[in-house]
Image (cartoon, rainbow, N blue to C red; front, side, top):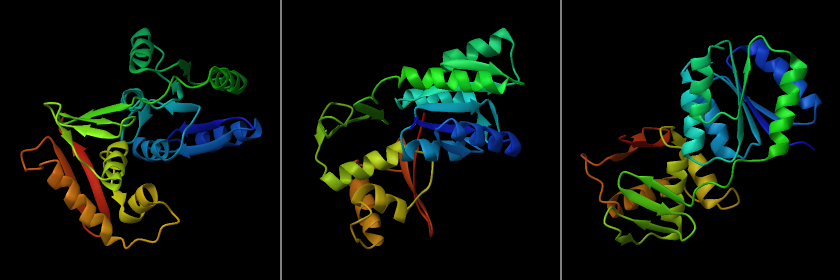
Length: 229
C-alpha cells in the first residue's frame, strides 16, 4: 500500500479526478477544498505528500505551505498552479515547496512526481520545541517554560491540552474533538471537563486581556487558540 496523499484543490471536478487517479495508484487519498479544511486534516494524521493548489477561496497555497514547514509537519509538497512565471516559482520554493507543476498538466507526469516525492519520504521529524507568545513547550521533555526560562508546572492533561490547541491554532476545536485528542476515544469524560481544564491552563499561563495569546470560547462549540504575531 502506498502512502497517504492530501489533495488541496477548490475545483470540484479536478479534485475528484485527482482523487480517483491517485487512489487507483494505491495511495490513501484525502482531499480539501480550502486552506482551513486542509489544515484540519493535516493536524489529524500524517501525510507523505500534499498536492497543493495555490489559489484557494480562503487564502493561498504559499501561506499554507509556510505553515506546514513552520510546524515541522513531515510531508512533501507539490504545488499546482496556473502561475508559471519565474517569480511565482521562486516564491513557491521559498515557501517550502518540494516540487512545482503548472496547469494544465499531464496526468502521467503528476502521478510520476507524486510517486517520486513519496519515495523520498518526509522532510524530517516535527520540532521538539514549540514557541508561542514568549513560552516554550518542549515536547520531548514535556516541559513548559516562560520567557525567562522558568518552568511552569503542568499536569499531563494540561500539557496535552495545550499541545492540542497549539497544533490546531486559529481553528475552532469542538469539545468532543478535544476530548478525543487529549483524553482518548475510549475514555468517557463529561464535555464540561474541558472547560475546567481550559480555565486551569489559562490561570497557569497567567493569561490577561493584553496577553499575546488568547484561548477564545466559541459558545456552544468549543475553543480556538489565537496568537498575536
